[in-house]
Image 1 (cartoon, rainbow, N blue to C red):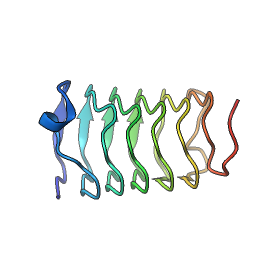
Image 2: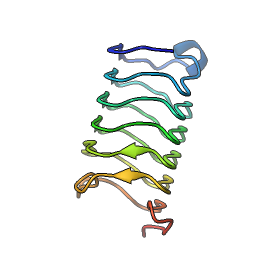
Image 3: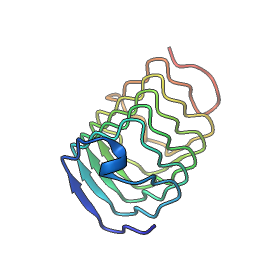
Image 4: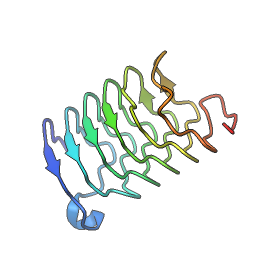
Length: 130
């Protein structure tokens, strides 16, 4: 699937009626705001340069996803699987990553700022953040 430049605002219905399984989909440059996509499957998806604001991606599968240069403002990624994801040059302002799995995740030098909640997060090297 290819959805380059797709704009979705205020999606709050359950995932099957809102979006299909987006694993391995090309969603580069996606603009998504205030959507509830808790538990969604974006494994292997290309979300590079996507703009996600206020999106609930808690418990989502983002393993092996490309989120490079994505803007994730106020996104809830608590308990999300980000194993082997690429977050290089991503902006993570106000993001919640509590209890997320970042094992093997590629992070940029300044990706994780002070405003990111890392409580209980498994870090890229496999250690748990307190």
